[in-house]
Image (cartoon, rainbow, N blue to C red; front, side, top):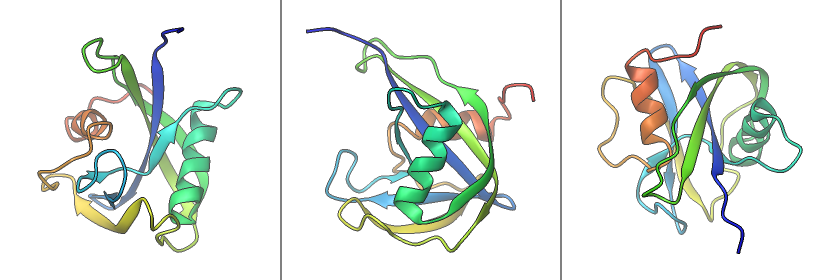
Length: 136
C-alpha cells in the first residue's frame, strides 16, 4: 500500500461577513457544517478543484477564485491537508445538488459559526476568521 498526503480543497463563498456552509448528511462528518469542497483530482489545479466542487455541490459557477490558505497536514489524522480557495465572484443560485450528502446550504456569520464544524473545514475557517491568508 502506498501512503500519501491527501489534499482537500475547500471553497470559501462569502456574502458580506457571512460564509456559506452545508449541513453534511449520510457521509463522513454527518451532522456537521462544512464548506463546499472535496479532494484534489489528478491533473487538477487547486482553484479548478474548488470551482468543480462548488458547481457539483451547489450549482453555483465560480467566476473568480484564488488560493488564500493552506493547512499543514496532521500526521495523526491521516496526513490530510486542506487548501482554502476563496471564490471572489460567482453566478447562479445556490441549491442542494447532492441531497444524499448535504441537507441544506446556509450563510453563517464568521464570528458566530456553528459549534459542529466539519473536521476538514474547521482549520480553514479558523485561518480565515483569524485573518491568516496567503499574500495576493
